[in-house]
Image (tube, rainbow, N blue to C red; front, top):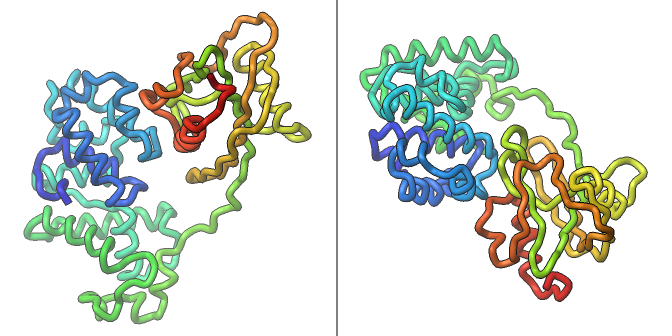
Length: 341
């Protein structure tokens, strides 16, 4: 992995953020392209927000990207563009928690800081056969204490932290861990108790809500209306087609008309459904229903919730950063649809 072959704190920081909630193979291409476009912290800090969000498009969890950009600007403003070498200033940067700060300082500067990511939690919850949820404060405190003691005794903190993380990623995996080949088998309390498959203990999640979303594809002289979400909150700063969640008792066309009135101050005639797209987020699922629409009446279109809006030609939509479901819709819109001009 390229981020394990460098001691550049910027590159290591970027990889640690990208790898949160994202598979290694997915990250690799994004990581290389990102560093090629913005090779230094100063380059990233000076970048256009929209360009950075576009480069992040498809990785998901977009708050990571917004925090990365905010942190880069903080580093330039408060640290002269040099990544700080002390723990507290690193921890104070947007989007960096205790484990991420420890990982950056260990892998970039060889400092002794414990790491407690998901892989490490799984390894020690099995080695110690911890029967309480790993999300509890008591277990969290215990694991931090254990990892801090071990890193303090380690001859090489870089090798130690890397080894534990890789051990969790390759050997002590969530499903079907390779216990028969495990070098720590004789030291593993969960192996002795026969509870490996039950560790780590997790709190049962509630059912995942499924939301029906209706959006309007409004065409005008060959261009489509899109708007930019506020920077705060879910999918902040990304572009989208106007619309929203179906309320109880509404038909989907009624949802489209209501949302266009509330969001844009206009009345639309709802035409045929052009796409039905399903997508899953971390805490809910959506089915997005897209309808071709035409504005009726003379009301001035004024976006009430968006921070920016544009009429964009179909072949120019790819220049903006959209959430995954909207990207799938754009792929549909690129087909043969005479109504769109």
